[in-house]
Amino acid sequence: MFLDSVVFLILIHGHYCFVVQDLKDHFLPENEFKRKIPETPTHALREIFPKTSLELFKKAYFVESTTFSGSTYLLSKDSLFFYPSFGQAMCGLVGGYLVEVNTIQELNFIKHFLFEKASRFGIVMAGGTDEDHEGLWVNRHSLTKVDSLWDAGQPDDFQGAQDCQVFYKPYNWNLDDNSCVFNSGEVAFLCEVKD
Image (cartoon, rainbow, N blue to C red; front, side, top):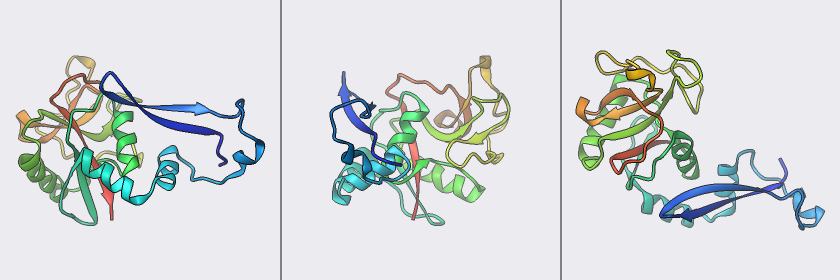
């Protein structure tokens, strides 16, 4: 892939947004488009910014867990979450993705982490969704089937509007299905970063 667009992180009304600007029809000379960069915008940003800047970004926006089975988990410090693609992009900037829970041991580790660090939140977004096909739950990042580690009676698609997998505080941080779009100070997201 050649550099033909630029991604900007912009602060608008107290919220960060990603904007992709196409450069093909702009003023840059042809040789500027020849530089090879990684395939995705988040990988491109990770290549451009020094590692120290990314570490400062990680410390500023996330609470970090200890390592479990080759993964570290990052909980957003503030309620920056509005929709899954934003959470996925933020996770991508630190080399991860919205968490994919694969075993009961991993679920228990994450729940313990959330009990310790997520007390101000009611919902923490995970990586599963059935937005594309109701009842067919897949992980956004790996596109693999979501493991059946749900809380009892879940997923229930309450009122036909619950297409995203979350950790739900009223269910003791067990997995629930919930809305995919939030505008609340009680919602965070959880990244998984493989070591």
